[in-house]
Length: 89
Image (cartoon, rainbow, N blue to C red; front, side, top):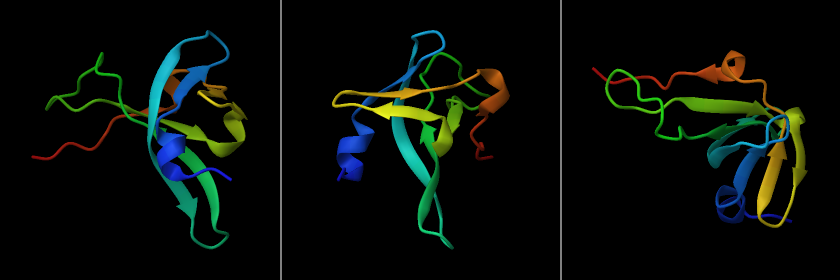
C-alpha cells in the first residue's frame, strides 16, 4: 500500500524521452467508483502563465507504467495533454 504523502515526493519521469515532469501535486478521483482517474503534476516553473502560474500536466491513470521506490514512470505525449492552470483575476 502507498500513502499519498509518499506518492507526492516521487519524481515523475516520461519514458518516451526520459525527462523529469515534476512531482504529483494532486489526484483526480472518480467518486462513483472510488478509483484514481488521473494524477496532476504541478508546473515545473519553466513556462509561466499570464499571472505567473505554472501549467499543470494531467496524466491519466492508465498512462502510469510503473511506480517504483523513487520514481513514477509515465507515458506522456507532450502539449496535447497539458492544460493551463486557471488564473485568478
